[in-house]
Length: 433
Image (cartoon, rainbow, N blue to C red; front, side, top):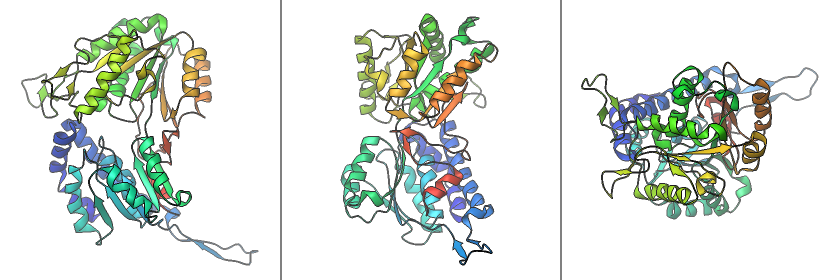
């Protein structure tokens, strides 16, 4: 609680750092800070109120033994957080690990690391010396020696699966390494045929008003730089062109600019911050361009005006989102996680022949969003998809975007998307014995 108080004194500075370093607009940076504080408060409250984390006894009258049990720390946890949510995602593992009595080594991300220079001061004021150790520099240089030492007892890693595999293999005894991994995903958005029975009406009425809002938020919140983002949209082939056109027009209305820029009003109190902001570095821009070029070469088109354009000159990383259609299985964007402002739309002829095999045979299994009509929903079709997807994905969303919240709910994934469960309660279990 002392740490929370010290951290809240840095609120304004931390929000500004998130805006300047990783290009997050004020609203999103503010939300990341506030959610982090709320997560810590909820976690502390849960420990205090739950008998699960208090020493407890089993005293069976007919048994010869009285048993006492309590949860204990694992040991030394190496914590690596991502650049896109350097505060919230990192602390969703770091704080539970500390509260369960572990020592934490925090690898400061190369991009997004400045925020930890501010939180470091709060830790120093609140915790015993040596409780949290911070390491900066190239992860490929600094992390392997630590793992090779064999002194790391647990790995809390949020990032890419290949990097996670390299770190795990570097440990001399990987069988005893406690693992908590939140990795990449290729989350599907599936639009069922019943949605289109009465037409789309420009995407502005009935079901479509909500669905288009969820689609925009799901694909482009923080420029699509979220493992939980919608990354491939499956739309019935007979309606995919109309869908792509309407979605493109809505994308064109999004404000593109620097994180602190205000738009749409001369009245500052009513103005909105930029919705699309710069990517963290030029290498991310280059990757977006590669995926777009590959898709165009193989038959896709950019549907929205200025899609894929770079605003501000050759050294800028501010990219206008690109709506791509039609996306087909031979394109890189069909399989690769873009982690950026590209919306690929894949037409399908049949759920059974096109959509279900993609989910069943895919590498990832974090979550999926199914969009269906609230009025003319084919409940049987939706129920069958839910049943089949329940053994593939960690979370199934109906008529809403993919996401991690609320923090009280278990969040995980299958296959190469996750190992371990994240929530206020579950993270405490993950980092204790």
